[in-house]
Image (tube, rainbow, N blue to C red; front, side, top):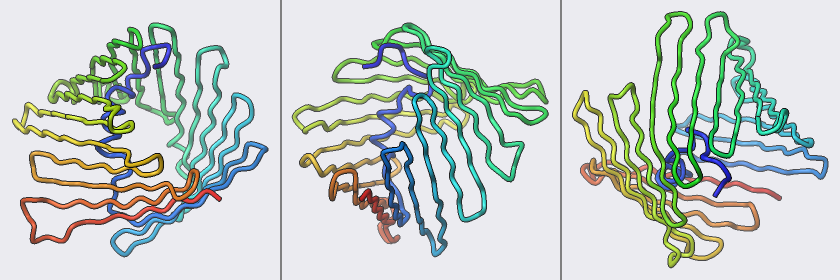
Length: 276
């Protein structure tokens, strides 16, 4: 576990990764390479519904500075500059997506042994200001986040939550959507499954009385193969198989369908990520 309580955005992230990470109904192909100078290049092609898109990304790391540049097929250029530990215990992030100069954003993250704090602000004339904070320890942490729109003087969102972390389990409760929804997630690591995990996630939206229960699991068949599955109370079933072809190169096959409408064609996704 980390030395501090972690960022509020990390609350429930590991449980969410089990339920959503690598699931897809797209066909993806990516290839990446790295050099000893700290330069990392990645090319990606995505096809969905007969439409194709792609991007080329470059990342350069030097000491505590990282520069990311991504160019996509729609001629957008996303540039991100990250500087860590300057000053100590902080991370500064500046990003802009050209040609939309108003998309620029500045973010500062500060980490302490018993607290974290982040603030982000856009560079346009009347930007939204995002703030989050957590207090506690690696075992128990309380946090909150809010987004304030300076033009209207209103809060776009405010959420709060608590996260309990043990060596074999993680429990998270988040009150979100300005108090209109609550989400409870529980992740339990199963050492007998070679690093597998089971997850239960319950969410309720008070304004519509809508409840969603999702259960999922991951299982390491061997050091190179992982299978995952998930099912919610609306009948949506998903499954995934990921195999490491060679170090850092993965083949992922995923599928999803609704058990209440078996006459519909299931959705399938295929992803191949190569690192020569």
